[in-house]
Image 1 (cartoon, rainbow, N blue to C red):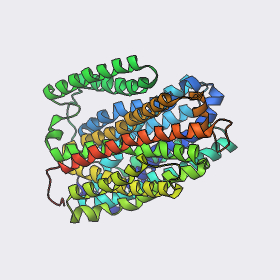
Image 2: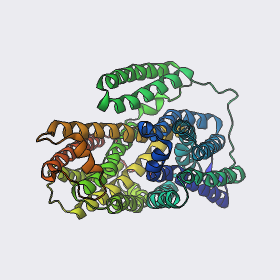
Image 3: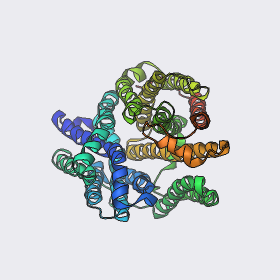
Length: 485
């Protein structure tokens, strides 16, 4: 779409819709997490509780690249509108759920909608704003993520305490309707649709199989290693078949032409790996502070909030930075600082100060805010205009997979290291009680359990540091030595 064909007021009507849609899909994670204990208790769904999030994530991951391809062929407006409507219907059904299995199905429907909404918010911004404007507009849109991180738990807690967990899902229904109306009234495209859309059915099939088996295999490694390994072998076979299909299909789901640029590939890999780093601190900083320092859940949760605030502030600097410095230099410098800050966590003792976790989280927020925003801008800039939707969806898919896969890996590391250290009559259940207790004194030998937890957390962050080393080296290998304007 040509930016000049859209009036200024129309652009901001569209941006309002994009902002609300971004908030709607991002708050879904923080608000639902708050309500999980109530949902599990009322629906008697402890055995299936992980699927409340996994079903949503699976369908989002599978559909994201499909929608990216459809948006390039059919236009952004129709696909985005479809995603908003499906997400809203899924939210309504989730709130009406009478059983845990119905809720899981409704969450899967939500994910089908989110698979269109999440990547297309970035694609639409690329369409209607110039390259120079894009960094600041992305930063402005990122405030929706920060706002969801701040208010999501508060809204979720209020709704659960004063109404019921059902309203956690209902709250997105009016937001979805507002977005649908704004898009219908204010978003009009001047595009030439293909007379026939060729659908890469085999590509969709192999991609779906590879993603489903990958995510299920990672989850199964901890409790059922043989099944997990089998699923991961199927993943490898499906990926090989998917690549083979894309190379020979006339109109592939994910065009191999996008990956001819080494700098583009590095943006995708960087966003994927940094998303794996992100889930590490989001999950294990609060656990570290609650289990070993006995701080309240609210105080521990603020460590994640501090990172979100710095992420937002730093993202407003991206436009000026990429106009003055080579993106490679920016990425290497910031990833290097993040690496040094996380390295300290491998050698910490029980006397490591609480404030240091907040400092590390803020450094993480600054680095992520600049580098991940830069990944988005550059990945869109480095492909032809008719591939911007697909490129954005590939980046979004990478970010989702990075978080999901590494969440499973970190969990497996934590459990494995804890089990390897059990001695002196200490059981896994006792360690679990210490980690999950809400700041109360647990009647067990803390002098034996605390070192077990600390060592396990050290090893989790060995994994995080390893990821940062890998992404640091990858960016050193970026062949681009020019300022991109």
